[in-house]
Structures are given as structure tokens and as C-alpha cells.
Length: 251
Ligand code: MG
Image 1 (cartoon, helix red, strand yellow):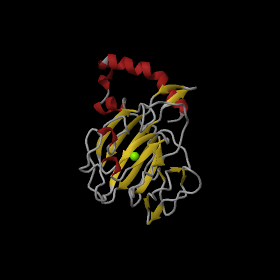
Image 2 (image 1 turned 180 degrees about the vertical axis):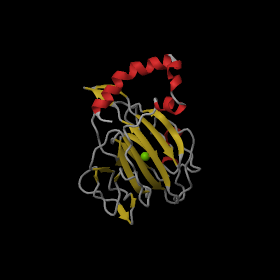
Image 3 (image 1 turned 90 degrees about the horizontal axis):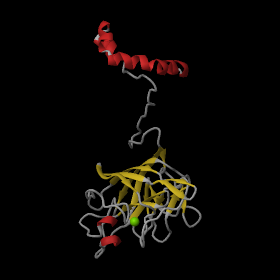
Image 4 (image 1 turned 45 degrees about the vertical axis):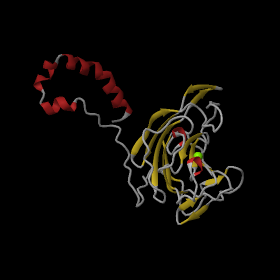
């Protein structure tokens, strides 16, 4: 349907709704013709296909056989190690971030915590993080049989919102985060609408359209400070956490 015919249809809509009010007016129509009145045929959704790793054809792959989509937060190239598509934190080199900036997104991340060293517990047991817009951390942590403050365990919005359940797999298993993020909006320096995040951890909803209260601070309360679209950032917390198959779709 072109724009003109769509407009014509919209103009005719009052007539259609009148016919709803007087259902008998439809008495001359077959049930199929009556049903057709509420069919909407346009727009037709774009077709998405999938590659061998399940990456949708309309996604941006953030991890391939090189780190060209990433850079160090401090400066220069991302210094983490990449081996056969598996990215591993190189402790001490600092966080890395995408070169591109994003606003509302669907983000897929696969991550894996190694076998913990003797005595590693709480926040020290293989900690990393996925920062949306470099400010809002979805915690990555080996929370398998590992006590810590729940608003800092895996899939928490760090120091803000406890995940609905603990869906963490044992160390050395690949885990998935599927994150749907609605970026906060600002009017000048003032917050207009807060950010929202949904997190699906290993197929389980653990954050359900959670309101983000502001930046995810280690110390102190969250706060909002106006910003625009910004990169995805991965945390170097000094542990050998690995990532693979990271892709993103702009919404
Ligand atoms: Mg972290």
C-alpha cells in the first residue's frame, strides 16, 4: 500500500468503525470478508536469517577474528587476548570499549568464568561486567555457589537491582546474556526518561524491564548525568573472564 492509499484508508476508517457499531451491516459479507476488515498487510517485516553461530543477519558483529571493533578505554588498541574468536581479559590492561556508540539496543554476549583459584570468593571470583553506554553495568561474576551481596551478583544491575533468580552455570561453561536496553533520555542537563534494561541469562528472564537508577557506582548512590549515545564497555576486574559471539542490534 502506498502512502496515498494508506491515507485514503485512514480517512475511511470512521465508516469502518460505524459498521462495527451496526454489525448487521456486515450481514451481506462472508465471514472471511468480515475477517479481512481487520487484516493489516503493511508494512511487511524485513526477513532476518541466521549464520552458523545464530547471529541475525541484521546484527552488527562486535567480535570476529580481530579486535577492530574495540579499543582500550585508557588509550590505544584493545590489549585483551583473542584466540579463535574467544576474547579473554588481559588483567591490568584495563577496560575495553566499542569504537562505535549506541543508544537503544539488543545485545547478545556469551561469557565464561574459569575455574576459580583457591580462596577466590565473593566479588573476587572472576568478576567482569558489561557496561551499557559505559555507565550502566550488568554484572558478570561467577555466581555459581558463591555468596556475595545479591545486588552485585551475576546479572544484577550493579548495586541497584538483584536478579529475579540466579541462573549462573558452573565455571568453564559458556553462558549467555541477552540484553534489551532502552537508553535514558535527557532534556538539556535534566533526565527526561530513565534507562530500562531487560536481561535474559541462559534463557531465563532475570531483569524484567528494570528501571536503571543512574550510573552503577561501587561507592555511593547512582546518579544521572546527561549524555548521548555511547559505547559498550567490558570490564577488566583483574580476572581471566572470556567472551565470544558478541553481537548487537540497534533498536
Ligand atoms: Mg563487574
